[in-house]
Length: 210
Image (cartoon, rainbow, N blue to C red; front, side, top):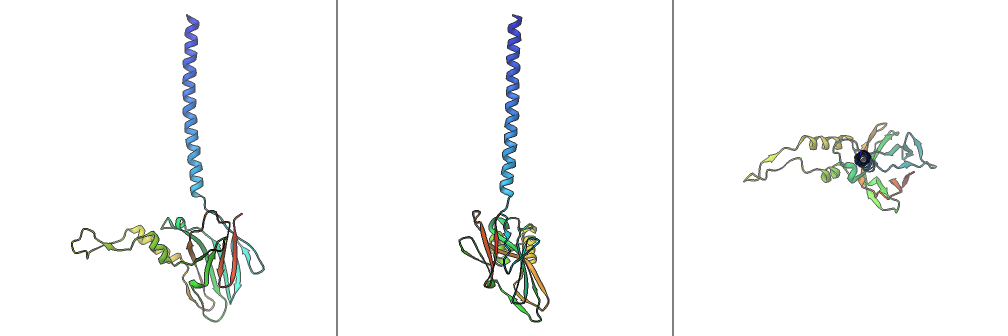
């Protein structure tokens, strides 16, 4: 009888240990899956500038001299409000310095993006980005019988628009020896894309994944 009690106790203890192990294993698998999911969703595709006879790579920027301008361009994710810019747009950061004594104009038509199949994406203005991500700053009060009263926009939408206006590249005239800098916006590239080309007029600036 004593032996039977010992065996039963051993079996009971083994069952408890197995349940505890199973529970810990489940928690570990859950944590690992969440870490993996976070890693997948937070990763952004990285492109790197490719040097050429007219492109010098400096601190991650592709730098070139063209038409009296010194231009530096690099891929850079948007990191401010509105938070979903990177979900819908491909973004670059550009610095342009006018090294001449004349005013030079840089327009949206001068800049475009080509993917690895040479599909063309035209440069977008910050208003285009705001139109996709946010409703109008003011909208009609749906409960107003006259439909002529307005509600003000929320603070995050106002802040998002302000950041888009402040940090985007402002096309137009660049005065002699002056500089402009800011984000370029394009339609979102496919995650399968391996290479893209920023075009400034007829000049190609190549970026590739490693």
